[in-house]
Image 1 (cartoon, helix red, strand yellow):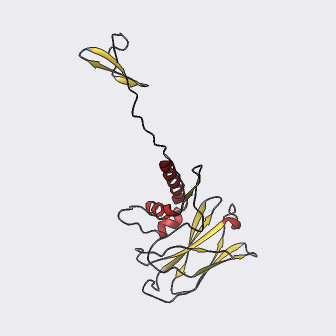
Image 2: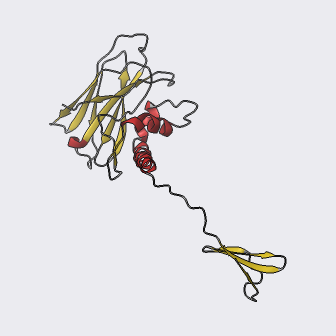
Image 3: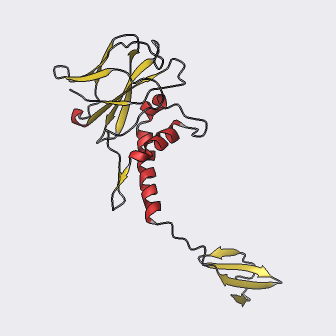
Length: 210
């Protein structure tokens, strides 16, 4: 700490770099302010940051799908939080703190309803994905008016789209033309059902493209 008298700094009361200047009893005071020393880079913190960074980015990219597939709890507030919290256990982080979530493990919807019966085929003649829903029996965890959806995710471009198929009580087929920038070899498909009230959903199920 130093006491100074200067025409230039006489009325200075501010912080400059790691130095704080202020007035005390009509005298100019200058002292060092090293700041708070913290170490926020423990391995555990770096792992958590890597996971959160990946999932927050994926939530934004999967928004068209998860806005329908997730019904957030009061404590989660948003579908983005619900997606992140649901998928955290499936994220792997390597020794260089690179996080990955394999398409086979990614969860795109959550709830107690029964998963729908959906298949996906590639039509080479039309260069389209053919999504087929097979009508299902009504049970305690499914209703005839549940809506069945498919979520498409291009894992290299990390882009998604949502396709509405049919009610659970009906057979339904949709032919989907992929965006030109998408490669079918990188396509991941997920199916799930949502109640008519939109208050509940089924877990998502990964569909193989044949």
